Image (cartoon, rainbow, N blue to C red; front, side):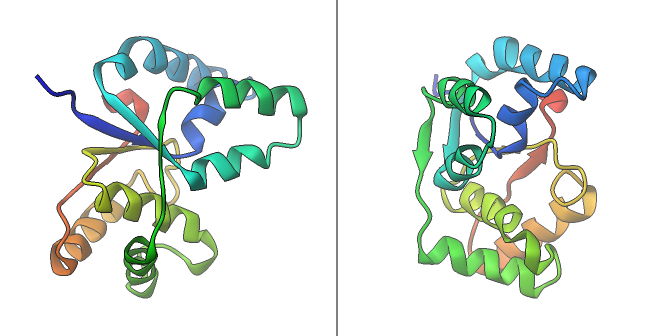
Length: 151
């Protein structure tokens, strides 16, 4: 049987080493060990670029090791166009274009779940509804936007 798919935005691997939020870190480590093996996991070149911007060299190395086994999805014009529609419809603010791109990548590649710790712009009922409404209008399937604790 084929595994369900999930896409991780940058907040998930980042939380793995973030000791400032111990409860979230523990939940992320548990997710990584107990949940993630049951899915086919993906990240994107956006996630890789954001992690590459990590200032602490040791942490950056650890994050690169953590995401090593993931298939990295590329962006394209269709993804950028879909992200632009999300922004034009007011789902995501212009300055958070990467959040729109994470949703568009998940939609374009028909990934079942977008997993994030971003409760401000992604993991919200309103965002889920609006993203899926736009997806239907634009010819894409619906996606689930969830936190690691929901899987």
